[in-house]
Image (tube, rainbow over all chains, first blue to last red; front, side, top):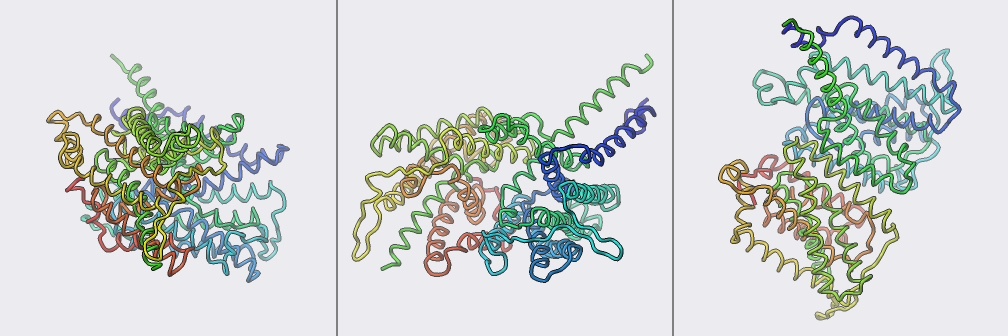
Length: 340
Length: 288
């Protein structure tokens, strides 16, 4: 009995596992099929936004959830990726694929460079350092007008298009963009999942729990930290390239602080360090303001109040709270069915 | 004598930064949380001052007193209702809570009162003082003088009063205070009241010089963090000095270097300080 209680996965009966598999497959089917039937463009737009936030949240979670440090730098990487692919497309007439790859590479390199001085800092200092970096990136994007056209934004970014060999496809409708976003989000999801279950993921957890002890055990802590920041930055850059092509416009506001705040709220209230946390968080917190449109004028104030309440009563995030509740329920059932 | 003009402008800006940053620093020192909603407390103070001085027509000094008292009460209320419940949570929840408060306050005001910029002119706003060939704004001079007086008073309070000693004690070793029976939550409430009162004072002194909008506190909170980092989290005197220094430096940067990149300047200083002294500035061994 004690082994069943100690390892919840082992204790889960087969029919529950099968039901879970079925539910996941049904969810995947729905995700793929629903735009074909739905008439609403608006809903597709919201879904695309949610998927972009999901990618950003998954990337940020590598640093915030797995490594345990707070980073405000993510929108900066998103913006750098967006501007990179947009500039390449508009000025150098590069194809989307080239721009996309560059949009992954450039923020990754930037992340590797800034990681070295930043990770020397303590917790609060690191957060402020990333905030400073993000603010500098934002101010530069507004003021370096020869490059970015500042607040006038960079228009005319060509749509997502893939022309490799026999494949010749350009995204036209909102549904097309939805599928691209879904593909990107799925890829990021599996990358994060793979990393989380690997030795790298366990090392990150070790660093999060006690980085001094990890270092004493011979872990090259800085390298793992750089890896987390760089992978997250690469994903953010990819999302940026997509977003630029999707909205055909790249603005400095894409780098602005509210994005950081939204991402942090998504992570902390969705559940950081988990895999579904960022996913559910992104869905809820993109959907919530839309849902609150019912109370049109007060929606953002209500949103703020809900965040305060959630942080007071659901401190570890919704996903963690839900899994704790589920586990408590399972324990109680197991205990009840134990032989006297 | 443009230099004198810039110096006064810089000191005025620095006084504003000092009042806000001191609130953030003292809350972090005593209560242990980073209050992301502090810029919004300043903004609420500005609207309260507008209400008292413009809508109700109170003269300047009563209006100022009402603003300070009102904000102090509000600060205590925040501690009572929200902060008490998050003090025992991990710092991430505290962060999200204060961020949520910031969003709540900002949007509440935006809806309840409207986003049109307002102005709260006082008798001092247009009056100028002539020193040689330079005319200095009375409002700015008053801002600097009153701020320095307020900080001198606060310094005395923290050093010598019973509550001030309790605040210092809690900032140095919270557990020990609980052990000897100091009512830590009460101290935290007073701290919040003082911090909010400082923000209210800043609003009553500085709002006459700017337009009052719901977003007026947002850049300030970031500058306050920069100041607190440069001065040292939780150390009041250093924070005030750093604030005045930053204000003067920014004023000269605007005049002689570039007005657009002035905000970047503050962050570069902050990053420089963080890199040069990565551990020292966050040492709370000394407390406030």
